[in-house]
Image (cartoon, rainbow, N blue to C red; front, side):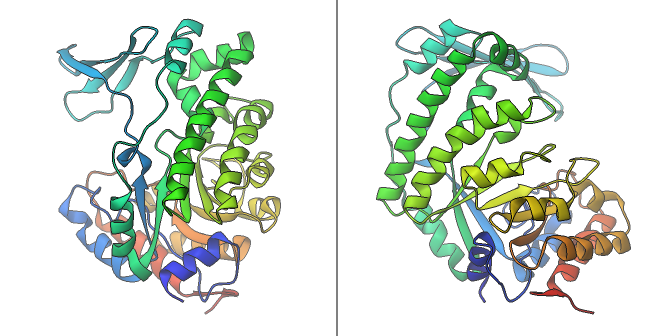
Length: 366
């Protein structure tokens, strides 16, 4: 099988000639340091590859104005202004001046008045075409697949992000009706984007994230089903009607929620984290997903930084035993975030890849 055929079969939970292996954030240009060059070479030459194409390339976000002011010795205050027919919205972010992570100081929405401003924005209109998607797909050829990523996340994650975790949690108690108004509005906008893409034969692979914003420990199962599953299912159904496939990226404690991804119609789920970062083992996830959703994961990226290569090999073999033989893509739980790829990291990534490649389609080979 080619890598494209192998990943396609894995997404459909069909047999493959070997276990697919995908390493996030390495085959593209994201790792900034030359120390990643040997890992990039390994991945590009041996693994199954995926490319991401953002729908923002055809549907850019609403126009904004931006100003940057010195906040203190460590941060700049970045203020973004968005005009709407009902008045201006304001977002503020503290950006690290020394390379450190930033933080949001003011989210886009604070209450009903801001929500009405947001919903007054014009409907999304394409400002370009999808030519860059097809160029990327031609580049990928048989080396892998290209996923069209919905740049606004899923409706639930998008709305939660507009308010921030604390305000959204309070709103889920005080004004659930407003949340549903925003979710419906966001779903309709997303459906228009999806329809435009499908009419131009973009696909068949689509990617979406954001479900983790409304999942434990931040929210309980009821919120997950009401705010994620119910609205995601409508988007995924539209994609499935065009014979497309949906990849979902969702961190968190997903035990007890996996049936929701099946119900919504996800085809692949990343990273399905085991304890201690998550709360569901690969074997438990395999049983809960019932052969209907491919597991992409779940080797913890932090383990690749710190553990021995022997332990990484043990984890990969256990993963294949527990979550294979079909509907599994061996992958780290996240892209590498270390500024430098150390010799230990390189050895562990290589052991992960080589071990996975040695695993046959129907189990572990010696």
